[in-house]
Amino acid sequence: MSNSLLWPVILIQSSLSPKLIRLQEELRLKDALLEWCIRTKQEKAKAHEDALDLLAKKEFRKLKEELKFINELMEKAAGDEKVILERYEVKLSQRKMEVQNLQEELKLKEELLEKAVQKRWKRTKAHVETLDLLAKLREELKVKDEFHIRAAEKK
Image (cartoon, rainbow, N blue to C red; front, top):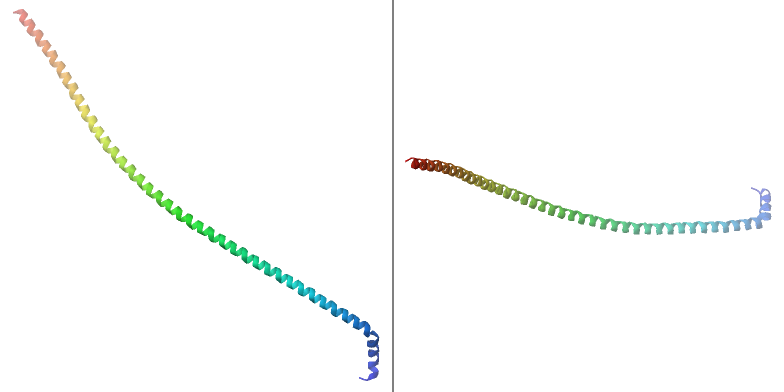
């Protein structure tokens, strides 16, 4: 290219040069300010992200500890439930044995009572029969006495 062709560009550059320099400087300042704002926003976002991450980790640890505590309570309750169930089963078997023993004792007492009733009934029956026999004998004696008395009176 020849100098003659560059002349209008140089002329335009030289006349626009202070304005262009000022605009370029303004552009650089604004670019720097924009870059600073972006970097500041990114740093703030990173700080917020880190803070949220730390908070989430603390909350997670807290929830994990609470869950562990609840699990321990549930295990203890399950153990207590087993103990209570075992105690209940022992008491239930004791009660069953007690009921069985009482039923056997009742059966024996009923048998003894039945024997006593039968014995008493037999005694009563024998007594009634004896009284009946005694009444018949008295009647016969009375009849015989009357017969002897009449026979003695006839003589």
